[in-house]
Each structure stands twice: as structure tokens, then as C-alpha cells.
Length: 218
Ligand code: MG
Image (cartoon, rainbow, N blue to C red; front, side, top):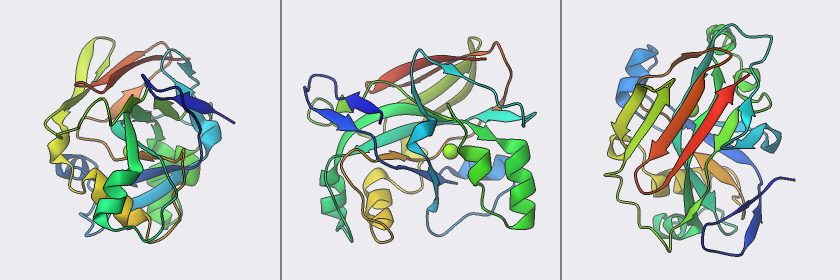
């Protein structure tokens, strides 16, 4: 069981499920040649995939094309089901910056067959998070910049307000399909600029006023 602490808060949270949103930034949809979706695209990662800033991403041997996806991550603080937009907003109690590592070669093959993407997204170390900041300490505006550098070269650099579905809307929508519980994490999708990483690469991600993560690929 993996646990996280909120900055300036003594409470520990046991990580539950990790829910991810795909295709949430228009320019990223275009760069992968995907269709725009009227509703958020949802998939899951197991909690066993989670690592923290400072740890290492282990490149799976069964892929030749692992991509970085830098994302805003939400921490859920209470159990909700069929939430209103306001209840959804209130259930978000913390934020972090995260990486949704993706095996693009496997994902492309699965997509072409209409199969689930799970094995392209679920591998050990495929979900990276920074420290979490409490909503009590920082009110997000979505004017913050989200960025990722690979070996000191900027690859992804956009404002959070380019998200098509905003955090509370995502949570409201998810809660119509599944109960969300304390300790669940939600990855909210990546802006344009995704690309391949190889062993030895150093990844540094950040969101203004929210957090920073640093990992190497091994
Ligand atoms: Mg993603």
C-alpha cells in the first residue's frame, strides 16, 4: 500500500485507484491524430504503478517507444458517487504534478484493434507524482503553466487552462460511473509535445505553484 502526505498537513493518505483522462488538450489530440471526444476518455492504472519524484522509471523491455505525458494530478479526499459539480470540487483536496508514462507502440497496436490500452499504461513506474499541495494552501486558477524538460530541453509547456474538461467537471463525470474514495488519484491529461524517452534520460516536470518532479529512466 503506497501512502502520500499533503504538504503542511499531518494526515496520510493510502493511495487507492488511479484514474486517468485521455485526450483533454486539443493540440495533443491533433498531434496523435485522434478524434475529439465529447466526453472525457477514461482509463485506469493500478496503484502498483506509482512512484515518487526522485525514484527511477524502469523502461519495460517489451516496448521500443515509451512516451512522457506531463499532467496535473488531483487527490480525492472523500467518498463520492453521482456528485454535483460543487461536491466534485469540494472532494478535490490536493494537487500534484505527475507523469503518465505510456508505451506508444503497444498503445497504437491496441487502438488499431479496438482493444483496451491497459498494458500500454499499467507497467511498474508508469505513474510518477511530485509532493502533493493542499487546496487549503493553494487555490488553483488554471492560469498556471505545466511544463516538462527532457535532459534540460523543454518538450511540453502550456497553460492548464487549455484543458477541455476542467478538474471538477472530470470528477463529476467520473463519479457517475464509479465511486471515488479518499486517496484516489486522477491524472487529468497531457498537453501537446509528448515524445519518446530512452534509458539515461532525465525528466523534470513542474506546474507553477503546485510542484516539481524529477526522475531518470533506467
Ligand atoms: Mg495521459
